[in-house]
Length: 357
Image 1 (tube, rainbow, N blue to C red):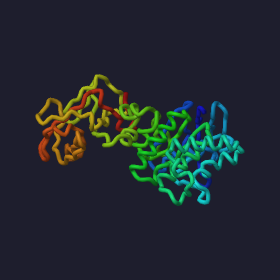
Image 2: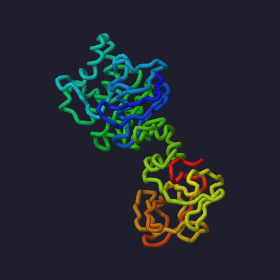
Image 3: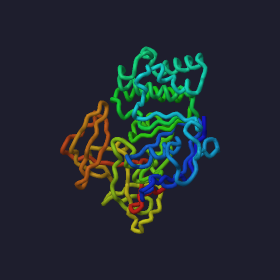
Image 4: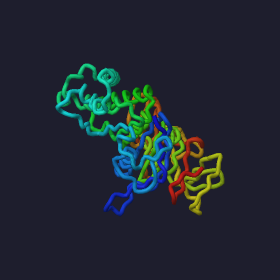
């Protein structure tokens, strides 16, 4: 197992004027499970490939347990990789695919058998050990790919969008097995994904990237309740956060004629006091009767979600959303009144998008 550090790591591909990864810094502790999350082209896979040794580092250093590994091969780094493409050896059966790297490393026959059977049990592959890859399902092939990577007992386990090609039910099953594997083996694990559900369900901490830069690195609670900027606020959360412009005055926010108290006075860089106010749909207090200092909205859509329903509300011609109990007696086409408690309000600078504390 390893502590992983990135120090001012830059990646610029040959022949490109753009910088794919822009001087990032982070530290991942021994045995931690971290997801690297972001949209396509944000630099997350380039970062993973530099950690793995599959891409050269343009500038900066990557360290395992304090040792610079920039010039080490993937084998020397003792990392294991699993990608969205399964890349199994079609002439070999499941058992032989998983055992392949151990045999190449000249591990003893009895030890190979013990480790292969152990990992097959973990990923529910024992009944299909003698089958060839082309005779099993895509979900089973992905489990074989993961088992083949894990059987080597790596220092760091790297996964790059491993569940992109499997259906929703299979994805949930494999996610649970990956989580179980990590909790049992305590291998430092880095999981690259564009899917926030995967990141949130698996990782202890999430590193959010965009345009080759780290936007925020923290726990799910930090990302959800204390987003560092507007990008993180908008990217994390389903349904998405509500964002509306307002003005800071003393220790409160003015949205039109409505004033919401904050109990604090964030400093703004805009000069005008203009800010963007953010609040999560599940943190909105909704009333069917007028309430002092509430925003009035018209219910345009109701989506039933079991014990809750998601309301779409029109406020000054813009759509906002609120999650309320299903029993709440709201009517489509009728007004409702919104308030948000001070602790559930995020405030962002209108120019920079940075969260104001």
